[in-house]
Amino acid sequence: MKRAIISDIHGNLEALRAVLEDIDQQKVDAIYCLGDVVGYGPNPCECVKLVRDRCSLVLLGNHDQGALFDPDGFNVGAEKAIRWTRSQLEQHDRMPRNSADQLSDFLGELPRVHAEGDLLFVHGSARRPLDEYVFPEDIYNPLKMEHIFELFAKYCFQGHTHIPGIFTTAPDFISPAVPKTGPKQEQRLQLPAGKAMVNCGSVGQPRDGDSRACYLILEDDSVRFRRIEYPYDITCRKIHSIADLDNFLGDRLTQGR
Ligand code: ZN
Image 1 (spheres, rainbow, N blue to C red):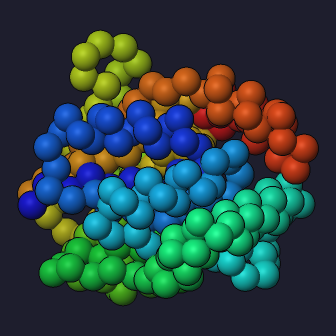
Image 2 (image 1 turned 180 degrees about the vertical axis):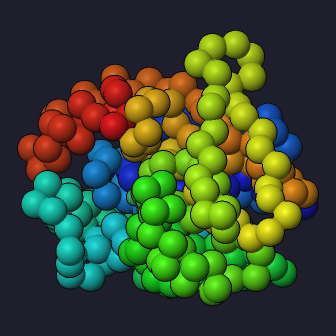
């Protein structure tokens, strides 16, 4: 089975469209989304609808949960964005013509974990699926890594940090080096024989210094990290025009930070 794995779209419709177009050319059997469809970005409703229509699995992320319930543990800018996102969802759901198309209901019913054979899919980590970060520097915290590695059989796919790569049990972190130009803006990495945590990166708000949208293709025992150019200037302008979204949320897209 060939799967595309996407995560952390964060209401960035331009990035999501570009990634879905690329996925269409990859002839995958299924698209899995690891959560945070909304939060930060200017098009939460459009992104929820697209993900709902195109993905066979969608997990709940901490920003999706924040938009549905009381946002907790977010910084000021993120919380303001979440409250604005909630108002957009509510506005959509209140319209009579959308009575059979409730986006909050869809988000509210999303699972936090998905297991399939020896594969596990979460937003954050196998230990705290909704909101635990596993950062590259956590390889210097072997206790944390050991605890989390104990909780799944083989491979755990996750998002949340917006930093793509593979954690091995060494522990080590392998960061994909994707060419900036040329026809093949991807890197194929073999999954280790032992266990691994694989972060698929972020579609709508990359934070690894690369402005291109990121996602991965999982096929057999290898993954391909793909980077996709998209018109971030459009998304950035939309964010600048919405008072409740900090300008920084747009500016950071231009640098992927
Ligand atoms: Zn996120």
